[in-house]
Image (cartoon, rainbow, N blue to C red):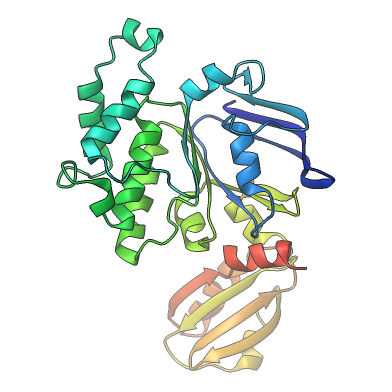
Length: 309
């Protein structure tokens, strides 16, 4: 298990930023950590990365306690804060070499980690080959984020914590960073926070939602999108128009709504999959099914339903 959080509280004065938070993240997972502004996301991430101390509870990273083994944990964790702190007057390659030197511990020397080789690997991994000789201050927001991710990974950490890694990026940059995080997730444990629900749907295996300092949901995307629906809704498009009343005769169908033309939303009376019955009905009535899929909540709908006041 890469991250274990049990019964964590964090107080700022009398205000509870985290209220009895518990969750765990296994090796190799990409987990989205979601919540409204002020919900406690950044506070929890800073505790995991040993930047903040908790008021009570237990936090372990790679089996190490954040209070007893903070130095060892920092060697195993890569962290990109929400506000990417970079030295803008340094050149990209110069900066990454500087950061690599900070991790040049006795253990690194024993493993014969070469800084130049590692910097070159990171430059290639995050796509900074053409920008590596530029000053960081001259880079676009997207390339600065790449530099931030590179510095978080320069010491080859087992766990990567990314706080709003795609904030402020244009659509093309979003696609590039998304692919980068997906590739990283093949060999690392990744925990990321974001307000962009499309990123969660595209990248994350699992989602944890926090509200007012407390966890309100923790599950896979598919299960979370299905929760709250005690019936199945199927979107189906036929090749020709057909009677609503006849569609209601399909076994297991509760209600039928016409979306447009030959397209329908068919609601089941329960959780049983009614798609085979729809296909059988279409065949018996000379209809061709052009499209058929189960309608699920979007992550944005799930997020709003769990975090609205």
